Length: 322
Image (cartoon, rainbow, N blue to C red; front, side):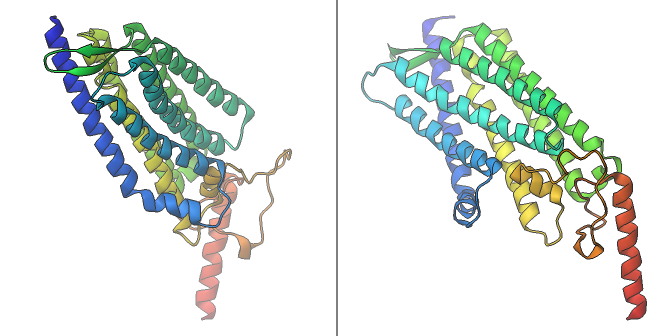
């Protein structure tokens, strides 16, 4: 392929990046009220909230860094710029995955085995991201239709990144769903059903983003096409995970009778008795917050069903007395 054709393809990549950056700015501004609510709510920010906010503001830093380098009117040293510019989206991606890791660990109530698997998976993915960052190169190029930094990344670096990302998605999703499905009856209730649906939605977004990216890199038409979907796939992951966080947060704060399970995921603080081998005893009924749409972390499915029967019997008794 001629150099001129490659430059034209690279111009297409630059236009896609401008569109993606515009989308990220719109997404950031449209949800800024939620971010402000977290920051000004008067509550101590838990780890998931801090990770969420870090992901959001890293996203804007990514936009700024790319817009600076893609719109300069004079020659610059491209290598430092591209190293910084690609660091932000990779960090944003790791923060998005970290939100999922925290969710998985909370669903499994800080199981040591699951925590080790989730952290090891994220660590491996982070290592592959650093490996990708070391292979990125950029040089100032002057052509009839374009003058600016032209970026290239070794094909094998990109293939390794795509495979590692798909494997990470698969491991985290299967672990998350296993933690939800083990609750049997609980998974049909509102919050746990919502978490299952979010898990499948998140994996569908991951497949939609990663598979086309991997196909383009394997086909290896040229460097611009290899890079075409690299930033969009990160944006999809970031938007998907931050949106899931907001839905879960609003579900927790918007209902007067909510499960402790949602709060545990948001706070990363399971309610089960640490170090106790026996099942938790039934709480006083007037302190039991449960409905036909919810369940409580720390109780077996049989206890949950008994609690619901007690609640129905009490309501029937009150109706008879009235």
